[in-house]
Amino acid sequence: MSLSINTNTSAMVALETLNATQTQLSATENAVSTGKKVANASDSPAAFGIASQMNGNIAGQGAVNDGLSFASTVVSSTNSAANQILSVLAEVQAAVTTIGSNEGSNTSLAQINTEITGYLKQIDTIATNATTNGVNLLVSSASASATGSFNGITAASVVYVTGLQGSTATINNLFSIINGVSSVTATGSTASLTEALGLSTSVDANGLASSNGFLTSAGSTQSSWGGGSGAFDLTKAIAAVQKAITAMTNVTSELGQNTKNIANMTTFGQTVADNLTTGVGSLTDADMSAESAKLTSLQTKQSLAIKSLSIANGQSQNILSLFQ
Image (cartoon, rainbow, N blue to C red; front, side, top):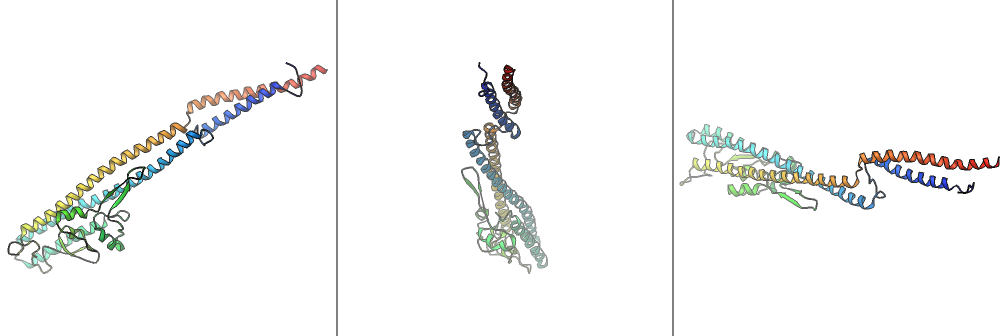
């Protein structure tokens, strides 16, 4: 091969090799530093595009899972309230039962009346306070707007997204279950839970029970559950409380089913999110052991290319010895 000071073929080849090695080394160093083999569209347009779509689905599934978490919180709060209401209803039944042994004493009956009304007020208070971010399943739809001014209630049912394509599920207001058992439809603007249960006969401005269907404040019995002659019938009164307990038991059963449904969808939703994350990783994540080996190899090639270029550049200096 001829020697020329104008064209140094060896240096050109060495430089091309060095540039190619440098490009590969830069890509490898980027993969090592970011942990990704596909960090942008220029690395792999197809993989980057697919990964971007999957990342959007991951974000969407995260929002679905957040919605499921909120629905679970609403159901959990409502279930706790319903169980507490069942405990108070047991107290109501005990108090109503004592009416039978005190029918001759207006003073005693007046005290029992205060006790029962107090229990009913507790039930309504528990129901109206079972509110999560404005959602309350234990107040009627009409009552939700009427009580919102003091209790922060803005909705009597909850709708949540169950899947990436926008499918939804609804947890309906529970008054329909309660009315179905008690046979009392409470739909007024201040309808309370104890009205729906058929236990209270009036409510105050806050929608809380102010009187009951068993006794009056004067200590006389009411004919809400009358016998054949219209007189107070203790058996029917106790049966009315038991019917209210049945209604609330049905409510807890409905809440329990919703709890299971949400738990199953939450588990599935998390699995979907994990699978999507794994898919994105397989498309974009770098194999660090392979990249480490590649980095060592390229650094060695870089050193050799620099050495080759140095030798090739030295050939022009060797031409001077021919003219000495």
